[in-house]
Length: 420
Image 1: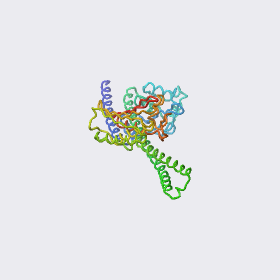
Image 2 (image 1 turned 180 degrees about the horizontal axis):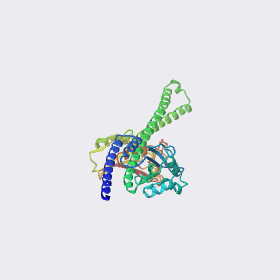
Image 3 (image 1 turned 45 degrees about the horizontal axis):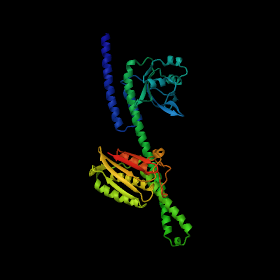
């Protein structure tokens, strides 16, 4: 008779595992189809009934408020009314019995909540669970990338519902719940980023419109007959307005570009690039940028550089233009800027070396940050947004490469980057 009962249990366990495997497959299909987490959790609740014993399932996640960690209930589904311990309920984590579950990674079975409540009269959640008719529970930790994120409660209106042999199955369910939650977080983060990118684009557009009006009226004014009759001081005011409007326009354009890079609105387009043509255009651009301050521009190409390479030519030209403009801006007249290109380990290396002022070592970390500026000023009062190098860094990293700088104060700087 004992052997027959054992065989029945094995069959039931095997059938339960088979059903659970099919359920996981369906959940993964729903995740891939883009279903939201609530509908997936509701589906899981409805489907688990034939596999494991429960009357209610709840999930609580760790949050931090004023440097205090709490557990907040974010989802509850029940076969019985939930009047007391529902969504939104929260309590401190530190010092609680749930903290031990998260720290140890071990599940907890309470098969008689009435007895547990008498032993732990300070437990508010136990009192509320009893009011809702819960008499036993199994609590499993939820982990994401080996870090605790919360707990899942399986509850029953009967005492003595759960056994240690249930734990492995429940832990598998908890692991799947962690995956569902992680996918929901990724989806929410992507939605928030998209929304933030759209808001930034709208704001930049709204700023560009009045600026265009200002620039237009400044140009019209300077074409009027009365403009020539103005005193020099009045003309200087127009000149200052025009210069600052132009600077603001450049700043808005760079902000728009950085917004696109941050939110990947305009991704890189990799294609075959003829490097001979690319370098010919670079020489023309480099000479034009350097000529403003009578600076000599040199391009040196290593012997192993291939004729064809794969990258987004417009974006990499943007990086080089930014680095060249930056080098000219912080260099004195009649010096030399040298651009060197080499190829090694299947990487294309670019290096821009100037004979400028150099940058203090303690300030180098600011260079690739958005609006990162050092104490070094442009040599002829040129404007600087502090965005050019941040844009260059984003583009290089989108290509899978790296950008860096080395500098000696008073002697010059070398900005270099590589792309695979």
